[in-house]
Amino acid sequence: MIRSLTIINLGHTRLFRAMLPCAALLIVFAVGAFAQQPDEIVKIDTTLVQLNVGVVDRQGRAITTLTRNDFKVYEDGVLRPIAAFEPTEAPFSLVMALDMSGSTINFRQQIQQAALRFLDALAPEDRVAVIAFNGKGVQPLFGFSTDRRRVAYAITTATGAGETHFYEALDYALKELSKEGKRRKAVVVLTDGIDTKLYKSDHDAAGNASTNEEAIASVKPGSSPQLNNILNEADRQGVAIFPMALPSGDPKHIALPSPVQMAIYTSARTRMQMLADRTGGRLNAINRLDELAKIYAEVAAELRTLYSIAYQPSKPGAHDGKWREIRIEVAPADLVARTKPGYYAR
Image 1 (cartoon, rainbow, N blue to C red):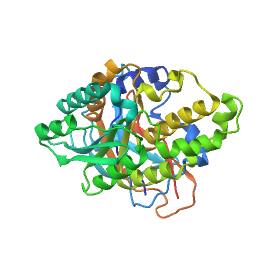
Image 2 (cartoon, one colour):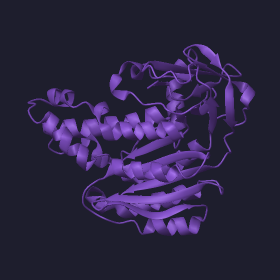
Image 3 (cartoon, rainbow, N blue to C red):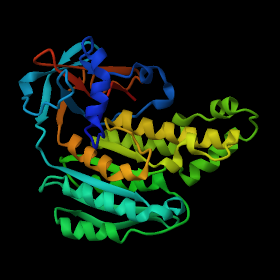
């Protein structure tokens, strides 16, 4: 069924520390709201459910020395056998996707320097590919390699202008990752999230609204075919998506916001959050450009703390469209585990 290993979770320490007041009562981080929203249905068509799992202690420190026997996985409250387990040091294949559309022209140097720093934080056996997306579509810059020098050079060649083909870039990245076999897989994408095609459809949906609230309510972010196609494929392969959201796409940063603009920007940010939550990644909001390098480094560090766990679902082959809740217990009991909250069996 679902394979939801994943890619890069940013700022795990900060999130876990924020969770700790509740962590005494919770062992797994679950977003119950997802289980109630039909807009986020994901088609499941693989055999195993694969998870990326982060574990911290009560002080928010990552725990990276656990074994298969330290985990228990429950689906809808039923204990399921663990079919496969990868420790935190297992290598992964990663696609770095860089937004080179017109909205990023003024800070290209910061983007490239931060991406280069990210490479320095990866393990030697991690395979990295680099793509850019701009008004000409997706530009593959370098295929999967452990040669950091050549990958770094590819990053420095990223350029472009024009429209933002965000979801086209994600689709390309997933197709390339499908050739990487059973390795752990992730996508780290730096963008403002304002996809050109979805901009137009969101604009049409919110065009008659007279207030911000009406405009935002008129757009249904989770009903986007582009988004759901990406979620379906990411689940099939077990790819984690880690969006890094540039401040230029933040609804709070619109200089003269109209209701339609608020709807477009809010929906774009909501979709990025859904990409992260439903694939086991994390959305990293960049508030200032000088944070870029730090956040890239944090993403790489968090990836190194994730376990990969695959289990047999309780009803394999049962495509009934119902929500399957995932819960993880870890020993000792004072540790806190975080993974995706579940999936729809479609």
